[in-house]
Length: 238
Image (tube, rainbow, N blue to C red; front, side, top):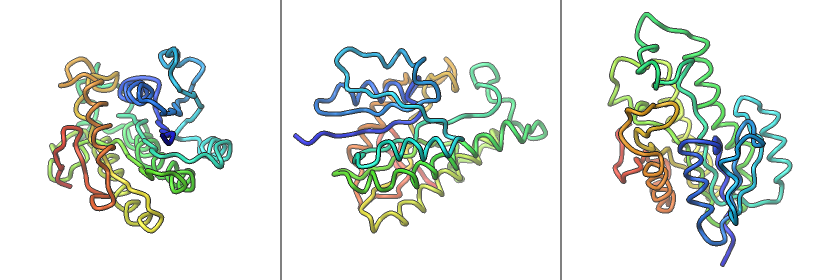
């Protein structure tokens, strides 16, 4: 059996952690779990699991390039840009009220989400395209949100929603730009999961969102590259 290598950003908690655990439980699968402080990511210490922890801050482009150079020659079957931020405050304490019209904190609620959610994903794609193209599966998944659906705009969460819409457009463009290299690219909504960002009032457990995302990644194919997918199998309108 060919060994499968999966790289996940933001793998130290929430959906990223659950995806790392699920992938590591698969036979002959090696997980490269990336986060800002891997030494503190003790939840990734799983006996017998093939997990390698690596430092990756999505706003530190030199560090991303450094990890890509360190992993030069390592095919990466599945790269998942899971790291993401909402804004200055987690929804667990604000109920998303800090991004209402007239209450914009442009540095924290607009610029930083763009740097992580949008530019971070683009930088990951550029830095690791050779690694992905050299693999058997050649898959790049960008974890996004239904909040980024223009058709589903709700009149609030301005900065976060704009960053996710931009991430969706970037992912769609990547699916076209990387097609000739055989790389399949999809934006995937993981559900409204009970993470540190969404809080305890969200709809589903992180494990359910993670399991659904992995099922969608398993199904990723060139014929549907660029489609906006949901963890539960639905296709989401742009």
